[in-house]
Image (cartoon, rainbow, N blue to C red):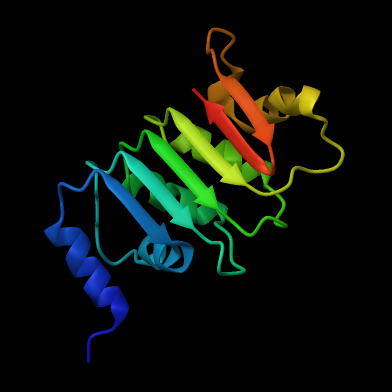
Length: 150
């Protein structure tokens, strides 16, 4: 019997030239936790991870696999349930590990103790990539969507 994971894995291997991928969070986590195989999709430039229908979130251990599996992504969008709190360490880990990333978008809430005026300082605290004073970037937070342009 073939499960959906095997179909998805076969599809990804067959479509090795795919540049844009939309994937459910459950399937992405299964992909990131599948350490038995070395799957790399360097041609995927735009990745959308949809977790709106589940209660799980990405953890730090998934970020290394994400950056290895999708090594050249330029655009990453992660959609969680709106009430989820955006974890600063996850954002920092994504920014630091996904070296080719130009635009990163994630939805959720920011902590009540962080004002919009201090969001850049908040990011710098968690991302070594942004600590470089010569690095220009822009941050926006609107309608529970956090976006950063690098």
